[in-house]
Length: 102
Image (tube, rainbow, N blue to C red; front, side):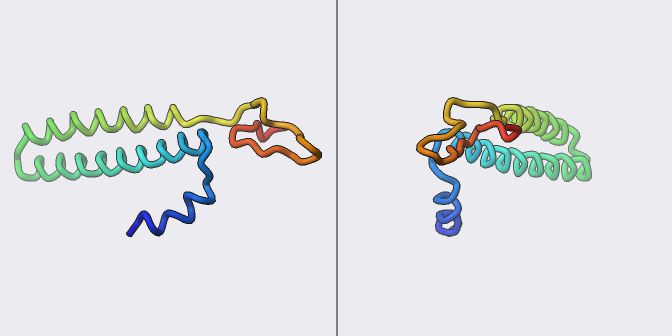
Protein backbone atom coordinates (compact mmCIF):
# COMPACT_ATOMS: atom_id res chain seq x y z
CA UNK A 1 0.00 0.00 0.00
CA UNK A 2 2.84 2.40 0.81
CA UNK A 3 4.30 1.82 -2.65
CA UNK A 4 1.09 3.05 -4.27
CA UNK A 5 1.17 6.20 -2.18
CA UNK A 6 4.79 6.89 -3.11
CA UNK A 7 4.33 6.36 -6.85
CA UNK A 8 3.38 9.98 -7.66
CA UNK A 9 6.37 11.25 -5.68
CA UNK A 10 8.70 8.88 -7.50
CA UNK A 11 7.43 10.22 -10.84
CA UNK A 12 8.07 13.81 -9.78
CA UNK A 13 11.48 12.94 -8.35
CA UNK A 14 12.70 11.64 -11.69
CA UNK A 15 14.84 8.69 -12.59
CA UNK A 16 18.26 10.26 -13.13
CA UNK A 17 21.35 8.91 -11.46
CA UNK A 18 21.63 11.70 -8.90
CA UNK A 19 18.00 11.32 -7.87
CA UNK A 20 18.51 7.58 -7.45
CA UNK A 21 21.57 8.11 -5.26
CA UNK A 22 19.66 10.56 -3.07
CA UNK A 23 16.61 8.28 -2.83
CA UNK A 24 18.79 5.34 -1.84
CA UNK A 25 20.62 7.44 0.77
CA UNK A 26 17.32 8.65 2.25
CA UNK A 27 15.95 5.10 2.38
CA UNK A 28 19.14 3.81 3.98
CA UNK A 29 19.17 6.62 6.56
CA UNK A 30 15.57 5.88 7.48
CA UNK A 31 16.39 2.20 7.94
CA UNK A 32 19.49 2.96 10.01
CA UNK A 33 17.53 5.38 12.22
CA UNK A 34 14.91 2.69 12.81
CA UNK A 35 17.65 0.21 13.76
CA UNK A 36 19.34 2.74 16.08
CA UNK A 37 16.02 3.32 17.86
CA UNK A 38 15.43 -0.44 18.11
CA UNK A 39 18.84 -1.15 19.66
CA UNK A 40 18.50 1.85 21.99
CA UNK A 41 15.19 0.47 23.27
CA UNK A 42 16.65 -3.03 23.57
CA UNK A 43 19.64 -1.74 25.53
CA UNK A 44 17.40 0.21 27.93
CA UNK A 45 15.07 -2.74 28.41
CA UNK A 46 17.99 -5.07 29.07
CA UNK A 47 19.51 -2.67 31.61
CA UNK A 48 16.15 -2.29 33.36
CA UNK A 49 15.92 -6.10 33.55
CA UNK A 50 19.46 -6.37 34.90
CA UNK A 51 20.77 -8.13 31.79
CA UNK A 52 24.14 -6.45 31.34
CA UNK A 53 25.33 -8.86 28.63
CA UNK A 54 22.38 -8.14 26.33
CA UNK A 55 22.62 -4.41 27.08
CA UNK A 56 26.29 -4.34 26.09
CA UNK A 57 25.60 -6.31 22.92
CA UNK A 58 22.74 -3.98 21.95
CA UNK A 59 24.95 -0.95 22.65
CA UNK A 60 27.71 -2.39 20.46
CA UNK A 61 25.37 -3.13 17.57
CA UNK A 62 23.79 0.32 17.93
CA UNK A 63 27.27 1.83 17.58
CA UNK A 64 27.72 -0.04 14.29
CA UNK A 65 24.38 1.27 13.05
CA UNK A 66 25.31 4.84 14.06
CA UNK A 67 28.59 4.59 12.16
CA UNK A 68 26.73 3.33 9.08
CA UNK A 69 24.21 6.18 9.37
CA UNK A 70 27.05 8.73 9.56
CA UNK A 71 28.80 7.12 6.58
CA UNK A 72 25.66 7.29 4.45
CA UNK A 73 25.22 10.98 5.34
CA UNK A 74 28.78 11.67 4.18
CA UNK A 75 28.06 9.94 0.86
CA UNK A 76 25.10 12.17 -0.08
CA UNK A 77 26.22 14.15 -3.12
CA UNK A 78 26.42 17.92 -2.88
CA UNK A 79 25.96 20.56 -5.55
CA UNK A 80 28.80 21.14 -7.98
CA UNK A 81 29.27 22.35 -11.51
CA UNK A 82 28.68 19.88 -14.28
CA UNK A 83 28.78 19.90 -18.06
CA UNK A 84 24.96 20.09 -18.19
CA UNK A 85 24.73 23.52 -16.55
CA UNK A 86 24.20 26.28 -19.09
CA UNK A 87 21.90 27.05 -21.98
CA UNK A 88 20.73 24.95 -24.89
CA UNK A 89 18.47 26.24 -27.61
CA UNK A 90 17.70 29.36 -25.59
CA UNK A 91 16.47 27.47 -22.54
CA UNK A 92 18.13 27.10 -19.17
CA UNK A 93 19.26 23.52 -18.59
CA UNK A 94 18.31 22.18 -15.20
CA UNK A 95 20.81 19.84 -13.67
CA UNK A 96 20.39 17.99 -10.37
CA UNK A 97 23.96 18.79 -9.39
CA UNK A 98 24.26 22.26 -10.84
CA UNK A 99 25.99 24.76 -8.56
CA UNK A 100 23.19 26.94 -7.19
CA UNK A 101 25.62 29.78 -6.58
CA UNK A 102 25.92 30.83 -10.18
